[in-house]
Image 1 (cartoon, rainbow, N blue to C red):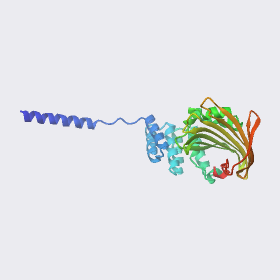
Image 2: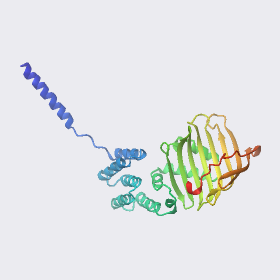
Image 3: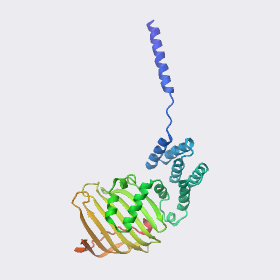
Image 4: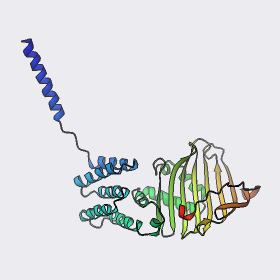
Length: 301
């Protein structure tokens, strides 16, 4: 009898185990698949990202994010033809959808315009297109501030959590607001110094002006600085006067502000530097060799 009970208990346990194993797993929703696809994109796992976005298209063919996500994954895999194909497939379901048609235009232009021939990353415009309208408006406000040398407004935007969240660690992207403006948004760490930056190249064919707004510090401690650099370009090199507007210790409550001014010739600083506070020169000195000679060439941006 005891042997019989033991066998029965074993059978019941085995049946329960089989039943639990046979329970189907709950499939991911379209929203969950999209989140997973975006996560894989940020991790540079493009094949895995593509699988998620294609699954979204299968279960929600009227969701434009599945098509744009798959297209971005294809572009990052170097398969631009497939990127356009999946967007055109989306236009069959979503006729004349603005995001899809805009993305097709961006992909096509990225491989035919001069920027692509210069070696700029072709997928960057796609990253910008994936930002929210609120994020794009913030970038637009920052562009306006940098163009106008409005370092107060630029400083407040670039030290904000919203701006810091735009790029992944050690990440950057480019976009093109108009035919004569190139914008580079960058987050990176150099020798223990973490910075959040926006560069503007204003002009074309190596002629124009340059702005760089940079916020950061040594792993974002309380001595963070904000600096706005500006100069002009000719012949693809930084040439002419420059200015550095510097907020020092912006997070410590003991902010110092000064302006350094000098001149550049073919990307090299020369002659005296003038430090100004409240419009008055308080210091003048000659450049040490190599100091502030980091200005990028127009075609090496």
